[in-house]
Length: 85
Image 1: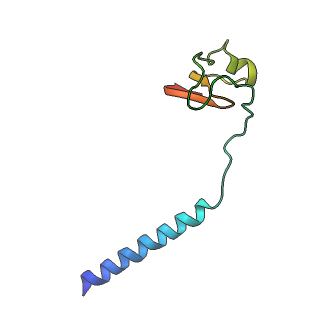
Image 2: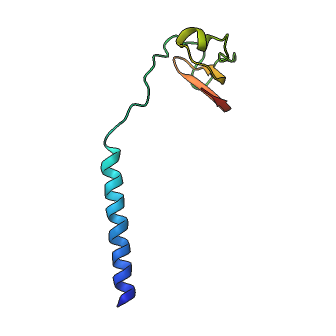
Image 3: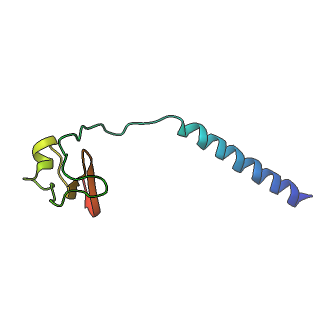
């Protein structure tokens, strides 16, 4: 009987946590907002081949951001593995 009660309590807790998580996902939070329209070279499938990051790159000159291994991707930015903003 004790095992059944504990198992029922465990399932009830998991269900409650899952329901709580689902409710919180309904609200979107914008972390930052930036317009990347100036970064038109390439596309998501075939991004540009020039790294635009660094203190003298297009990224810094256009929107004041710095990073490494950042490429234009048709109005978006692609950050290569190991890169950062």
